[in-house]
Length: 225
Ligand code: E4P
Image 1 (tube, rainbow, N blue to C red):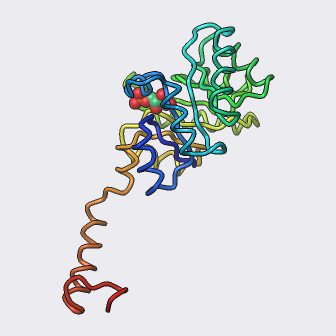
Image 2 (image 1 turned 90 degrees about the horizontal axis):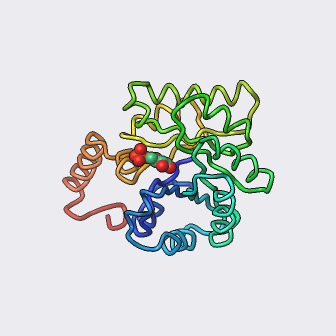
Image 3 (image 1 turned 120 degrees about the vertical axis):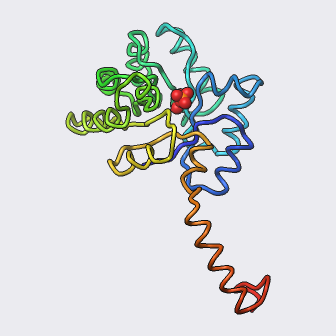
């Protein structure tokens, strides 16, 4: 399962890249608005840092297929070919996805709440389909189960589309989907940090150091004993 950062702050992204095995960055209009700068300024800084080959997912804002198509061209022109165009799966969005795929754009179908949206996005040729786990949970439906079932729909229908699970509340949810083998998960920085924030591990490491230093002396390590 690819691990993708769901954030647009270049400093935060740099910090996560330094420590975690991450595979790219997703953004959405809400995430970009939080940066308080021109969206392309922020996105170009991210692209420059992650490089031309890393996955960057950028969402369109237009509500009709023609405008979405024009936005996609501008996004590709300014951010490079390996930029996934995130298109909400509405009626117009499906039309746009079909046209974008015919024209060679990488596409992430987003704002997915139902199996049917995901199935249609897959049929339209989307590379990724992004079910919103936590938002689905908030509707009283099991978002994790739905993301798994969408993965199964793609595999059972021989579709190449991968699930890019989104909207997570905790690291456990992401792990559940890794066990099922979904293609990717996009996770906010605090939830990524939560993947390794385990008190028992911190304690175990502290005990190793304490035992070593009690024998070899304070401040010692395998470099200076
Ligand atoms: C992903 O690309 C989605 O836009 C995002 O994960 C939504 O997350 P949220 O439900 O926490 O806003």
